[in-house]
Image 1 (tube, rainbow, N blue to C red):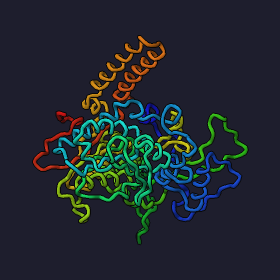
Image 2 (cartoon, rainbow, N blue to C red):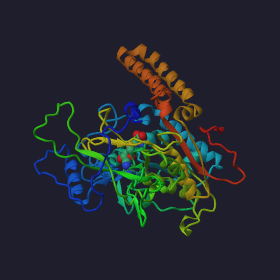
Image 3 (cartoon, rainbow, N blue to C red):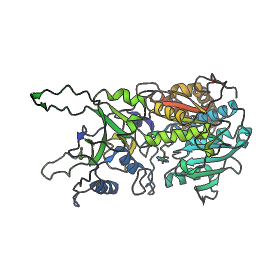
Image 4 (cartoon, protein in one colour):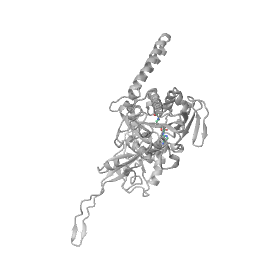
Length: 508
Ligand code: SAH
């Protein structure tokens, strides 16, 4: 949830979508005034691009805002601004408590054991690793399981941001050299002897190899991937009478189905010099409008699942679809279960696992979930493009559908609430261990000096409040809003097996 603020589920905070007066994508030229003051350089370049192409999809807008090399939120933070933590924009679970990453590590070890302690070719992968905190806590945990540690061939980090890649390298590899390779960069992990950590910007750059067993972690990654938004619209009724030789007759009632129309982003008209806006509410520079004509995505994406079709009959239904998320889920599935589509993706024995932890509804299609976060506060996703974090709810069921459709060799478990998953993984017991250790330190410090004792007391508080925050099942609590879902190898004859954290058990 990027801590509390990101969990706030709220409607799009821009004005209600207006229909675009003229069909989109038909070469409309939007006038921009050179004199307009834009909040960020990206706002200006986006507006200029839209004046040439016409309104853009929400996905294109999100992609630019988050990962444009020229001013994207994740890709242009070279001036030392950190997105994470109290001084940044949001806090994530691994930053709240070390226990989070430790339990993800335990889950990976448990799954590796359940799959017969795979002896070699194990890959650990993380998509969107942020500061690297989760991987750090995971690897500290995994190295305690010597035979699993020895089976790890390489660690892969899929990261689009240069500054975050550097932060991850520092944390996980210390002073080891970082060298450029054909798919990205590599260095040596400080926790596992001689094991390489390899960074690349996109999972598609990583070759698929049916002899490997990938264990893939995606925490708060899918919510950062671009979404398209569609609204179901009743067709315009044709009231013109039908002309017959004996005179006009009324047209029979139109029974055409509703149509999906895409919501598009365009700049707002420049603020008029005669209207004064209070300084507390600066005018938004971009707005959503409903396209009156089909777009390439509206004619295809909403037809890809019966779940969307079921909603189209209700006029004004709004659905969000993230094709990039679906292709990541199918990529994970093919790596784990193989695919019969090409010889390169053939995998005789499915192996590995993917664990997806993120926020979104368990089974419904996300709607109106696009949000902006800045300095721990919800803001409009259409303010300060590139300076505001954007995210949207994850459609877990769509990810599951995509994984299962991509590979006959996988099955999906969950989603379950994060509180359930963490409790089943033993968060309380681990917190108690850490608390007891801190208490022992406190007693020892008491004999030495008061200052050290105070810092241990703070640590105690942090452990206590941290783990409770992660499992909070209040209406906007992290334990309820966040979900865990797993993609696992499908083994005929072992259909009943449930992974640990999803109702299953394993003895470590
Ligand atoms: N998992 C981390 C960070 C979450 S923030 C944590 O929980 O703390 C999202 C992360 O995904 C960042 O590291 C960001 O740079 C990365 N990211 C966002 N979009 C991406 C994309 N399209 N491809 C690869 N990485 C991306």
